[in-house]
Length: 238
Length: 296
Image 1 (cartoon, chains in turn brown, blue):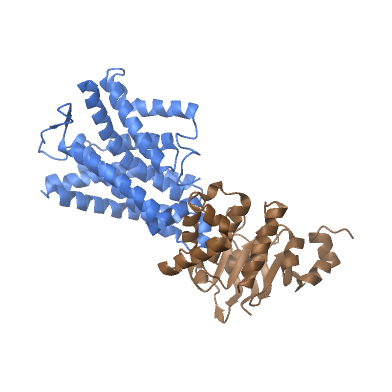
Image 2 (cartoon, each protein chain N blue to C red):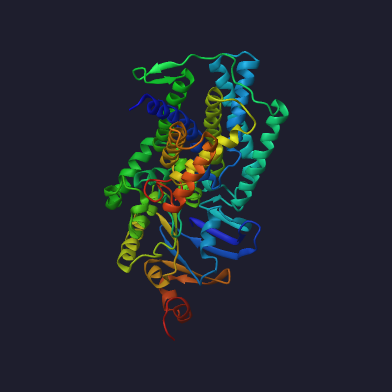
């Protein structure tokens, strides 16, 4: 097991608890998707792992290490990276500067340069626009840049918050294809997705988060067939 | 070009350079912290008074006196950030704004208590003016140094923001604070940097200003009003906009008053007139949405 969340309780600042007793696991090289209705706290799960919310109870174990309550920079250095939902790049910086800033917590310049080369090879569109400001990129290009920034950290675990949001179907497909390629290179992926059907298709397992708790979990194929999930989240009629 | 016009342009450039030093701090602080720092002008004034104490009262040479005054103001800038602005960093931007107005008034009172309401001068020595550009323009040594240092600082700041890792980090935080956090960037540190840099440049502007005119408790208000106008003129948060706005205001003021278009009593109204005209014609500022801005 590469990441384990045990009985997580969390909220924002002094606000109420958003998550009550959330549990899940991520194995090495796995793609796991968390689905659930709006406001179920899906994004909050990712932010909590990343130390951005207020953790009130529970444990987060990465590999054999307890990372509960660590600072974001320490969590990054333990090998976890996150791509936020929506505005997930620095619009006023160039594409290349964005990638440099992705590796902000890394000190080794040679390593950063090498990594950047790899990213440009992996996302040729980023190389093409390396000197352009991120603000002028299209939605899909921006999502590729956001993925590239996170990959600058060579993470063991990559967390993606709604990677397909706002993208046209064809572009969405490209993003999902890249996500599969990233997994093939040995990164485990934990994803939160509105587009549950599409996300579950490329996932190994899924969790359904309802009313701030785990409601259902299982192999992605089973969830896709589950009539209740189908009705609630996949837009299928009874 | 007549000698009068040349002289007025020179004077306008000097004023513009000083406004720019103040405006850059304001625009940087806005970019990172998201509010207009109303006490920034008092940093300018305190810088000038500080220099006066070390140079005139304690007899230090100019360069060490400048060094110590700038250093003290950087420390004061960091103290203001730590104890007045950082605690409210996550709050509505109206809160630090109001705090900064309070600080402005408080710091003016401190100047009054220590130095009194009377006009003071920064140095008893008068420096002879030098003719430059083929005898067309009379300039004081401090004006020449002010312009040269302002230009060096502006270019330096630009290169620092563009090329250095810390500069990129500051622009990144200004560009999208949430993403910055996700990549492990410390937001408090960016506040420290920006308040330190801003205070240092403001103090230097204050010292140059002290050579140009007298010291009085409200000198910070006068220069910061022009700097605010410059920042808004150029588009709030934009570095290039602040610099160009500053020179526009300096030059307009010098030319309109010097040519007798406007009586000198109206000098301080000029930035407002430019500003109101600008807001009517192009509310996004000269460089809004066109050039890179620190904050979108």
